[in-house]
Amino acid sequence: LHVRSRRQRQMCIRDRTYTIAQNELDIAECKGKIALNNQDSVLAIEHYLQVISNDFASTYNYILTITLLAHQKEYQKATTVTEHYILKGHPFNSLNNKNLNGLKESPYWNDFLLKKDSIIGVSKQQLDQGWIKLLDNMVYMDQEFRSFDITFFNDSYLNEHPYLMMTTIDSVNFNKLVKTCAEKGFPTYKSIGFNAMSNLLLLLWHHRYSYQTNPNWVKIRPFIQREIDAGNLPPSFLALFIDQYQISTNQPMIYGMLLRAYYNPVSYTHLRAHE
Image (cartoon, rainbow, N blue to C red; front, top):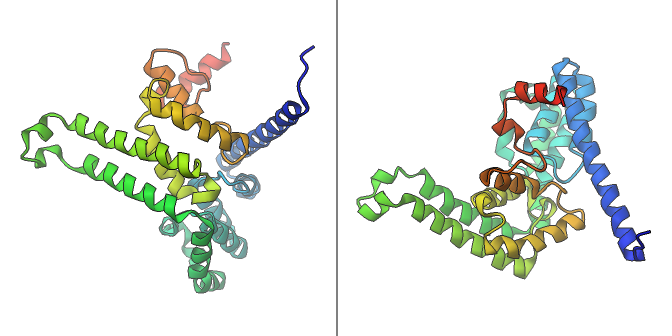
C-alpha cells in the first residue's frame, strides 16, 4: 500500500479534479463542433458557452460563440459575451467580422460601444502591462526580421546567414523570458490575457526542437509547472512542445497534440478503427 502525506493526497485530488474539469471543457468543444456539423446552432451555443467559461478560452471560440448568438438574434447575450471577451484581454479588432453585422445594428451594440473604452480600461488595470509590453517588443523584433526579404540586405553575411541571425534573436528573447520569470513568475491567461499569451507561445515555439536540451527550457519549466499545478495554466500547456520534440527526434508522440499537422485525418481514423 502506497502511503501519501495529507498534502500529497490533497494535491492529487486537486490535480485530478482540475484535469477532469479541463477534459469536460475539451469534450464540450467537441460536442459544439458536432452540433455545428449537424446544423444545430442552439445546441452548439450551449456547448460553446461552457467552453468560454474558463480562462483558457481562445479568441476563436469566443468569436464563434458571439457569431452563433448573433445568428440566432440573441443580441443581448452576444453583447454580454463580447464584454467578457474584452475583459479577458482578447483583441477588439478581431470583432471586425461581417457575420456580426446584425449584432452591430442592434441597440445593444450601441450601448456596448458607449462603455467599450471603460471596459478596455478595466481590462488593462487587471492585466500585467509590464509583461504585455515586454512580450510585444520581443515579438516585434522577432517578426520584423522574419518578415524582411533577406536579399534586401547588402551585407553579404546577413545574406548568407539569415538562420543564424534569427536564432540569435530567438536566443536573446528566450534569455529575457527566463530572467523575467525569475523576477515575476510565469504569466498566465488571467494575468496577461489571451492575446499576450499567444505572443508568449510564439516565442517559446521557436525553441520547440530544443525542448529537452536547451538550458533555458530547464530553467523555465519549473515556473510553468508551478502555474499548471496552481490551475492557472491548462495541464496540456507543455504537451505541444513535448510532442514536437518527440517527432523531431524520430519518436512517437506522447499526447497526440500534432496529429492534425502530421497525419491525414482519414488515415488516422482508419488506424484507430483497426486498433
